[in-house]
Every structure is written in structure tokens, then in C-alpha cells.
Image 1: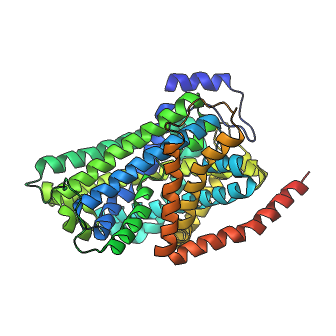
Image 2: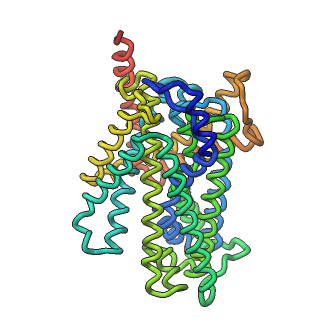
Amino acid sequence: MTASVSATVRQNPAPGRGRLLRVLGIGFGISVGVGAAIGGGILRVPAFVASELPDPGWIALVWLLVTGFVFIDANTHSELSAMIPKAGGSYVFVTRAFGEFPGFVVGWTDWVINVAAIAYISVAFADVASELSPGIRPLGHLIAVTLIGGFTALHSVGVHVGGRAQLTLSAVKVVGFLVVVAACLWFAPHPASAVSGSLPPAPSLGFAALIAAFVRSWQLTPETYAGSMSAVYFAEESDQPGRSMPRAIFGSVLVVAVVYLSTVAMLLYVLGAEHLAQSTLPLADAAQVALGDRSRDLVLVVALLSLLGLVSANVMLTPRILFAIARDGLFARAATSVNAGGTPALALFITSALSIALALTNTFEQLFSITSFLTLIMILATNASLFALRYREPDLQRPFQAWGYPWLPTIGVAVPSAVAIGALRVNTRNSVIGLALIALAYPVFRRIRESARAQP
């Protein structure tokens, strides 16, 4: 990767306002997807799913179906990002397919969610660090702010330095997870539970309750994969987007899927569904069963390394969303400035400043709860973009065409639609708030657009 990066930089002119460097390859794309996905979610979500669906067969089914859907989602993202290699991810695709206002809603939702994620992950890092060293607990906010500031400084240097750091952090976290999983499977004294080959009804749930539990589990489980397709945010910086983007997207999803499915299988094997449902940190509990009391510290170290990779990836990718929004006149034009290292510097500093504010005020959880329904809408709109663009721009060059069109992409639209309808019933309050925010966003969008057009 290093040689090809250097060659690409020499061939490109020096960056200026609105110009990014085309220097990133497949390795970086995989590493940023892995870095932005594996972390806090897989440490806690398996316990939530087990508490909702107490039978190991149903638990396994949820994870397998979600993983299958993520590959279908990756199929769609691969065509879109290879076809429209611009910074910004879903914002770019939805704007091209459906117009400025839907793109506005998706772009700002995506940016806010990722800003909140940086704050949340940084605070979580401080919490995990205090488990290893209780004396630093009072310094939690300082640690979180320092972490955000440190990665902001690192990524402000440029994509070369940031890309290499992300490759290292992602490799370390994958190895760390797989080592813990393998050790637990090898040293566990006996299986606590075996995943059933058949699929009996969950013992304590009626049909309606089972469907509701399945919807709640489905709402949260895909969030553990969120970020696995983060290469799309860097499509404009890819050295060969038509070739690199599909390989990076499928590669990162495959790595994350291997880590997740092996982790869930190990947890069911070592702890069993009942113990898993009651656990607050399942991986640590499984390690304690298999490896002894001191193994908890090992898991906490792996968790810290995972969270480092998460913060790094999110600090690097989130400014690309704001950069794309600003380039289209929906934010201050100054946010399109790019420094000599290929980093959208002002967008980076604005993103980090807001993340620090959220970390200090602990308001990120409120944003997550409010935007949970909008996240479903964003996934739905992104997958629907494929159909709109196939219809509206059939002659657009497509270096990669989604497999199984239209049937597999139809699943990518149907599943989030069904989950969104289920969310309206199961999580009505936050879903209604999400719909209200879309309605309120329209006059804001009109005002911003009119102001942008009035500028010389």
C-alpha cells in the first residue's frame, strides 16, 4: 500500500479548498470498516439479544440473519460507491437519487449520529480504563476529551499518517478478539449450552411476544455492524474506486462477520443462553469461566484496544460527511477546505469540538435515542437509491453491479421497511420524534438553501 500511495500523491496536484487526495487503497478501506464496527456493540449486544430471546437457536438465528442482511447491504453499497466515488457516503447516494431535501435529512442524521458516537465511545473508553485502574475514575471526562483531541491531532496531519494508524489499530483489535475467543473455546471446561440444530419456539414467549422480541433484537443487532462499510465515506480518496470499493466493503464486512459469529458461538458454548442474558460484560464472564479470574483484565485490555480503533475511525470518517454537505452549500463553505495532508481540517475540528461538548455534558445518549428511527430511514433510503439510479440513470457507468438485482437489493429495502414499521409499534415515542424531526427539517433546509443561493 505504501508504494502505491506515494506514487498516487506525486501524480495529484496539491490539495486546496474542496480537493481530496486519491491515495487510499483496499487495505485502508478494510481497516476503516473493521475499525469503525468492532467495539462496544459486540461486547454488550449479545447479552441484550439473549435477554429478549432466551433460546440459543433463536439467538443464533438473529445473528445469522442480520449478518446475511449486512452482506446484502454491502452489495448495494458496493455498486453505489463504485458508481459515485465521492466523499460523504449515504448523503451522496440519496441526494443523487432523490434530491436535495432527502439528502439533507440523511446527511445531517449521519453526521450527528457519528459525532455522538465519537463522544460515546470516548466516554466508554474512560469507563473501561477505570475498571482496570479505579483510581482514574474521577478523570473520566478528561480522558475522553484527551482521546478525542489526540486523534483529532493525529488525523489532522493527513491521510497517510491516519491511514497507517488505522491499519495498525484494526489489525490489533481483530487479533485480540480472535485470541480471546479461541482461548475461551480451548480452555472452557465443558460446554454450558449447545446451539440447537432445530428451531423450537422460545419457551416463555407467545407468538406476538416473540415477534416483538425479534423486532427489538433486530433493531439493535445491526448496530454492531454499523461502520463496517465505512470505506464508502472515502470513495473520493480511493486510488481505484471501481475496483477498490467493492473489495474493501465486502472484505471489511467479512472480517467483522467472522469476529462476531465466532464470538457469539463461543458465548453460547461457554456461558449458555441463560447466563449470557444476565451478563453485563459477556466476553469477560466467558474468559473468567474458561481462563480464571485474572482473565477479566485481558478482556478489558482488548476492549480498550477496540475502542481506540473505533474512536480513530469515527474521527477520521465523520468530517467527510460535513465536507460533502458543505460542498453542496448546506453548511459553511469554509468546511470544504483541505490541508496539505488531504484532511478536511475545519470539518474535522468542528466535528471534534461538538463531540467533546457531548462527552462533557453526557448528552450523546439522548441523541442516540432520538435518531434511532432516523437511522432506519437512512438505511432504507440508501438501499432504495440503487433502484432509483438504475431507473433514472441507466447509462451511468457501473464498475460493479450489485449481485442478484433486483431480488437481493429488494431485501435491502424490504427489511428496514419492515423493521421501521415494527419500530413504530414497539418504540412509538422515538419513532414519532424521528418523523417530527423530518418535518421540522424542511423549513430549515429551505432557509439554508435560500441563504446559499443568495451568496455571490
